[in-house]
Each structure stands twice: as structure tokens, then as C-alpha cells.
Amino acid sequence: MSAQVTLGEVAATLALVAIAAAVSLWRRAELERDIGLAVLRSFLQLTAVGYVIQAIFEADDLWLVAALLAGMVLFGAFTARSRARAVPRAFGPLLLALGAAAAITLGLVLALGVFEAEPRFLVPVGGMVIGNAMTAAAVALDRLADEVAASRRQIEATLALGATARQAAAGIVTRSLRSGMIPLVDSTKTTGVVFFPGTMVGMLVAGADPVDAVRLQLILLWSLLGSVALSSVIAVSLAQRRFFTPAHQLIEPAEPGAR
Image (cartoon, rainbow, N blue to C red; front, side, top):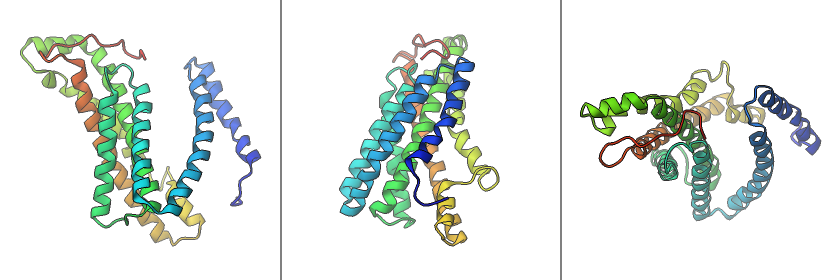
């Protein structure tokens, strides 16, 4: 594959997008609009952010990096909220979860000397951390809402026996946390067998030493595991409180699958 990709080659891959839309239409998943919007936004956003990142690299200013990452956290929380609409006031927990996951993960890798505090490291790693944290938190909260709605009678019975809201929701919180973490755990387990990470493959294509490519990819994978765990547990722990009153009474939940 040549290093220069033409616009026509990019457009050709819309055939696969058409397959995704056709599957959604066939099975009445009602995702056609989301797929179309995702394609349009990805084109516009990647084009714009490519120039933004280039400008940040050239400026070599950590304050610009911090502003970019903060914007990503804010936008990620808004995006995840759209997938967790059945969770009351989900934006706050999501914002805290993504912000904490990004700050702690990046802070640790810098403190341990894994990466230098430079834009060329912080921007791509921070983007991967926030992106994966967003997906995990959204999946976890989506599962949390469905679990609360489906287990309403059981929760109310547990509360009636004298349990606190936290005790009544303990099993639900655990299952929701697992839902948020499992996709990345599974992809990590199958790395190199079923799943070939883009960072490692990109380095190998560019001619890097295989050992260096593998080491960098392991650092990223293991860092992402930590960020996903943090975002999921923080989001779920905070959001589960939104389903209960201060008197430990269950608030009327949305119907399972309703968004």
C-alpha cells in the first residue's frame, strides 16, 4: 500500500459502510442515521484535528496539549451520555470518570518515566486513553440502566428488608462494571492472534524494530486496561446513586432498551 492515500480510495471504503447500513435496515436496528452521522463526523473531525495536532506539535506547548485533552474529555462525556440516556443526570459521572481516568493514567505513565512530557507522546496516548475510557463508561452505564429497570422488584424487595441503596445495587454495579471492561480485556487477550494493534503494525510498516514495536504496544494496551477500569468503576459507582433518593428509595427507572 502506498503512503499516499487518494480521496477515491477513501470513498471506495464506503461500500463497507453501506453493508453496515444495510444490515441495520434489514434487522430494523434503526442505526442507519447514526451510521451516516458517524461517517460524516469522522471525516470532518479527523480532517480538522489532523491540522490541530500538527499545530500543537509545532508549537510544542504543554498548555495546548492540556486544553486539547480537556476538550476531548468534555466532548467524550457528551457523546457517552447519548448512549446512557436512561441514566438520570449521567453527564456529571461521565465527566468525572473520563477526567479522572485520563489524569491518573497519564500521570502514572509520566511519573514512571514511560513517556516524556512532550506533545508527540501525550496527544496520541491521551487520545487513546480518553477514547477507550469513553466507550467503556458508556457501555457500563447503558448496562446499569437496563439492569436497574429489569431488576426493579428485586431491588425494592432488598430495600424493604433494610438494605441500603448501595447494598441493593451491588450485584448490578458489578455486572455493569464487567460489561464496560470485558471488550478491552478480550481484545488484549487475543492481541497477536486475532487482533493486530494499529500502533505495532504501523511501526513495523514504518520499518521499526519488532521488539520496540511490541514493547510500545504492550505499554499502550496495559495503560488502556487501567484507564478503562478507572472510568468504568467511577462512572458506575457515581451513576448508580442517581437511581435512588437520599432516603434509599428507588426512583422510577426507564424501560429496558428505552433511550
